[in-house]
Image (tube, rainbow, N blue to C red; front, side):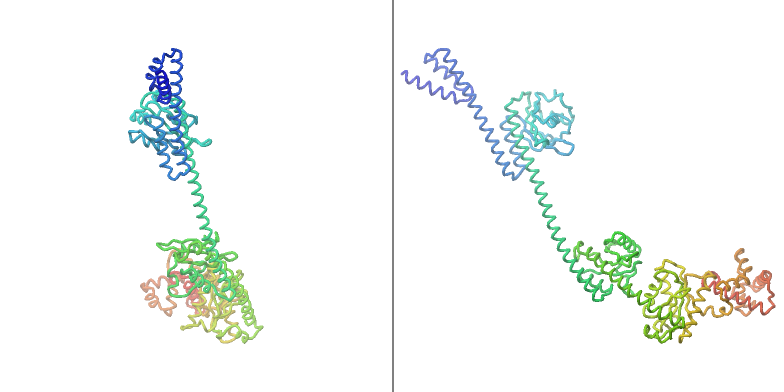
Length: 640
């Protein structure tokens, strides 16, 4: 019987030691009493059993905590879904802490505001997305100190300023006590993990350590997620850069191939138009060549069709000349790429390409820029050849004009016979000879004389109507010179027709003399016919100002009267002489009464010094009047 009692006592002691704290203690006490154990022994045994129960309970709890932490660690290693890992981490912390609410706040912005991301045990939706401004509430204490912080009663917290909106959210959730631990990696705080109760509570060191362990795991999750995201972004950037490099290399190969093709075309003697056609074909879009003013170089009635307006086009040419790169032009709903063809000191022209999607922009732009460089080489070559040709042809024509060579030498330079001469005011201007020679082309020769350029036109430009073709061709050359030399006052005179070397020299001398004759008359920026001055050549001396002085000496007082009073005395004289000195005819031409004509004539005779009855004086007066009328016609003045 005693053996059975002892055996039962041992089993009870073992069972009581394994039980939860406080359990089986009464049954053990009864067995010890029945076994007649001394009071001191009973007290010692009960104390040992209670200590064993507490240690066992602590080990069980620690096992559960470790298992939860190991589960989180395994999920951290896999880290497939950060949101799911953190949500489960908060849930496990909530279960093990045994608090009413557990939540994780993450730094939301550069200012350090904390926003609730994951929560367990909350009952109000406002709290689940709560934003705590930096510097307020318990969160600021946790973030600033980077140490665990807890308060028994939140409303009595005085270590950090309160925010009314945060206090309202806490009150609606019914929270009283808070424990917060930081989520920190190195010196950086990523957020905070909080455990809260809806009653006043003093958190134990075990609770602080447990929540801190979960916070360390949460910080590792956030940091790993950030590193992985940065690595993914870096990998994406690297892949994008590699793809861009591949595209660039492919574009470079394409551009290089086109450049080689253009270079070969130049070597074979291709023109600018040929280069443009090659670029257009390789780019799969229309490409045009224009001069520096935006005018297309290809001929045709619709040559400007498909090009931007002149103003935006010339602006783009200037911008491309300054940058050396292609410039986009938008005009209405259309878009073009424009790249200037650069000379030594100016833009020689430009290439204009329709901006379409036939090839990538990183191919089109460098292709156009390289094509413009090649075109510049072609232009330099062409200009050099043109300058040499112009100098040679100028020497040949100059020799004929000087009488040191026979007209037969011209047959080596022109196919058609020479039919006319023009003199153009372009003397002393650098490049004027080359510009004029390019403008004249194969239709004639250009030589530099003392007072201007002399153009000997061939029959290839002569048109119907007494040399109208020569006038039109000379005017075109004059306009080109005026634009290229930036001098709108450039003037030209179309001389008489020629039929041999002697007539050629005489016509050239006369045209040059007429050119000098126009300046004192105030005529510039126009093309006039030498024949218009035929009656006055015999009146003019070797001085260009003689004709102007003659007119002013005869008609000066009458012109001055008209200028001061706004009258038409000179016009009346013109009409009077045109009507054969008939007052009635003059009145009809002027659409005034005969008495008005008579009154004007009376005024004229009083202003002039000569005697109107003297035939010699009337001849001089009529010559001056007609020369004045010619001057007005050339200048486009009223009454002409």
